Image 1 (cartoon, rainbow, N blue to C red):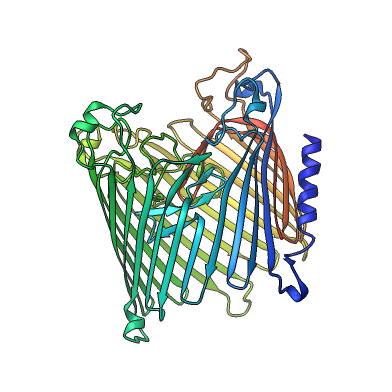
Image 2: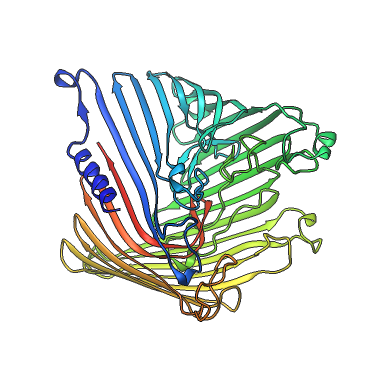
Length: 559
């Protein structure tokens, strides 16, 4: 572990020595750029969590690392990315462990491209990342925290005419974990700016549309497909999705709308009947001086669309369906994040912001924020009760106050109610969460921040308490310690009993402490602690991670 640590830190420090590398005289040979990122965990046995490593070693390593290199000269650029799993961290579908974990060491050439970018058009071959509209119809992207890389291996092209007409096209094989699916994805996206076309100065108006096609040979002999799936389906081997969008901005108001139609599809490999789907989305916003408002509403039905019908991985998603809820950063507020019910969901969210600043001292201000979101099952048949059921709702109120140049406080209250059965049963859990976040700036380089959090609940796992202390030495160093404790009921042991029969499950501290160092474009963070099982979410997309105790090294650098 020490050897690995020194190697990774050395790579980061060496890479950060310069911002980029110019080739040839006066940079006429182009520019070489790169980035390196690693997340490595040194697992240790923890009787409190009731689990041991899956092999004979009592201590072992999981490591996900990514190296990306790009070269650009004039309008031409090429790039390559390699992923290293030594082996993969627990909870990532890219890698699994067996008794001899060294067999899981693997290197993947996860991306390569060549691109020509001109004033009015561009062409790209290799790894394609793209999003049409809001992503309801299509999104290919990489999120290393979630273990997602859904790029296409193929080609894309874009053409723009006088800033009022843009068309894009894509085609290729989608990436799935450590390889490519047998399916093929093709599509096009069109955007017309009516305000540019008619030279409007006050109104910004555009109409857009997209089409996505998935082709995949279907076989009745494939594992998981039922005979009923093929006898009743009408989709054939092609899936088509279409969307139309309208965007408008005028006098502080903004409007975004989208409607998606999806042809018959087998949402899951064991689905009895191929069904069509749709999604409708609208967002209204308003800004005036120190006040802003935004509201979103979305209805969707049978929109769980996969890149390939023959893969059960959670990252096997062709489109992007984030939850319409607030994205939390505090520990206790993020214990049970909402995940979209792709079978059918009606959801909405409202945000209100107001800022009040002192006229005599601009360093003093108030920021007020209120947020409410809710989601229900779309149809009565989705629940055992025969009625539409609540899936999720939350109400958040937070106030940020900058008192003077030294003191800043943030107070948050969050009410959360969610269905453990995703609306199938008439049962919900309720949590009331209180957070106090205080920052004291000692001088220009030193600051102290601490958090106090309390979760009050009669359901699920009962009451929780959490705290964090963080000291910053600008511009390079930061140290912290945090702890989270379940006051009343048993934590989630993932159906595993503690190894120590005399262990009291109520006395579990989910502690974590460490430091970070930042220099130029390099950041290193080293921490040790016990981590609770749960979901890690980014942009409303979530990945389940099992509980573990260990040392965590994170490093990122670019040049």
